[in-house]
Amino acid sequence: MLLADKVALVTGSSRGIGRAIALELAHHGAKVVINYSHSAQKAEEVVAQIQAEGKGDALALQADVADPAQVEKLFTQTIAQWGRLDVLVNNAGITRDGLTIRMKDDDWRSVLDLNLSGVFWCCRQASKIMLKQRAGRIVNISSVSGVMGNAGQINYSAAKAGVLGLTKSLARELAPRGITVNAVTPGFIATEMTHDLKLEPILAMVPLGRLGAPEEVAGLVRFLVADPAAAFITGQVLGIDGGLIM
Ligand code: NAP
Image (tube, rainbow, N blue to C red; front, side, top):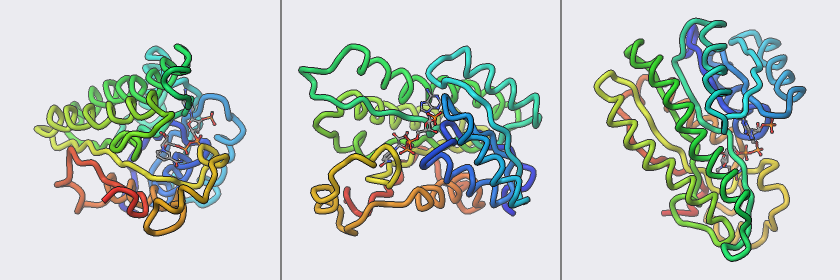
């Protein structure tokens, strides 16, 4: 129970990778805020699953992470409920794919607003709390697209690459107080986000020849935020992609 008495906030944890991360952290004893934008019922199901297991605890909180005022309220509610914040996982993300010459202004803005600015709004709130506590761990979920680029994802890869720069700058700012900040770059993981993709050309690019599972990403995040051995890892970009990038 490495996370007993620890409080974690996982953005976008009603479904997919965020849900798997929330379940994994609660399994190790954490009290977890299940943040979502629209899927209230799915978020409550995650809460119920965690409470049924009886190791950690959970609370569902609605907030659009792209909106700084809603993010401020999300952190205020978290502190009101549990009085501290030990772990932040910035996971909420969307895709609005399209080739550059056809990309609509809204598709550019909405992806940058959530996938990059949303990470900043949350990191700013968490930093204030963690600096006072002189402890904390932050993990930002980026993507292989932020490292290698992807045709048809200029908005998404720009945001995810931005998250890597943000991670390294914040890691330097928070290191003097022992707070670690790292980024994880998943490859193709089996969630609703990748549900409609044609599998054959994707699997041909992945040396391990399969999609990743959300639980595999969750295991890496749990190591970074819970394991004492991860205390000396900061400012790093950790790939989990079946060998797609090497
Ligand atoms: P997903 O299945 O589509 O789930 C997205 C989650 O984000 C949902 O819980 C959703 O909540 C939440 N969300 C969406 N907009 C939000 C907003 N404005 N405010 C707060 N929460 C919001 O996605 P996923 O595949 O699990 O991806 C999770 C993260 O991993 C993303 O950052 C994604 O870019 C990254 N990633 C995924 C893959 C992959 O292959 N799946 C690969 C690399 C990186 P609602 O249910 O309320 O909509």
